[in-house]
Image (cartoon, rainbow, N blue to C red; front, top):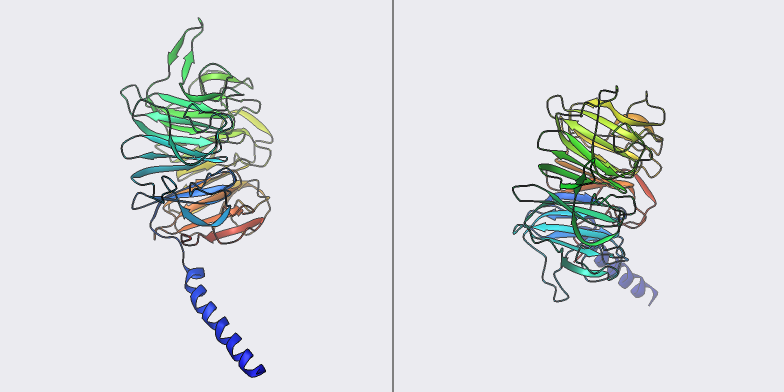
Length: 405
């Protein structure tokens, strides 16, 4: 009898392992874009659907539950199980997620305490996508913290923002939270307000925002206690102000193709030299320039040979010209991805030999590889690394598992 029990048990375990092994080894593929937020992550797939993983306490995964997951789940339209589709962009933020469809409509889901979903109904969390109240075509969205901004696909190329506005990060000239999108405006010296136009790219930070303009200059607005607006001051501004070069000449920073904002710092990439310039808080070395000891309200040079850059709360990562990834700054959760939890004031090269794109969240980061798989590293307590675990930290890139179910 004991022999029979042991034989049956052995056979059962073997069968279970045979079933689970392929699933455990399977990795997400067909990813076109990845977005790392605060405690969750999302990927846009090549077929126009999306999958999210990590914290789901407010429904930000969009699968109709409030179940935190360490495996990706497909985003649904509703409880009928129909997959959200025709997506061209997805953005994971703090407790909520937003996406843009190919018909240039914007949608958000998850936490909505200060109107983060932009549908005019603050306080009502949504487990499924709801349409953002914008009556113009949307080109793209940026969302970090509790605010979001949309770049409109109109001749003016203006911005509309919504959500938390306690530091003026919505750029409408006030500090009033907005549950419905409002225009970003420039406040003139005489008190009049004019629409910010000719925007090429927008990056929403935790409490501030920056945009690159068609003339290749940069404008920032919002919180500025550590100089993250780059205008030579440490004074908050509720409407856009130009980033200027140090030296007292008030010369605008120009030649910029991309800007990123998060935490208490910002970085921008030059078109011609592929060099980075960063400004703001440098307490963890997130500016990447050891000559800056604490803060700077004007841009300082960092590194040459950068394709794109992403800012985290205390760190920065860049996709280099040779498609490798470099990170610098704070590293308490392993968000620099170099196998340690020791911070660095100069760029460190990750073990990823080649990446197609990069996204930096508050305390973790993710990259899409050329084979359309995804790797994430850093804080993983809420499952945001997608590796099937809820580890406090992972200091080396982890393969994101296949979609659960």
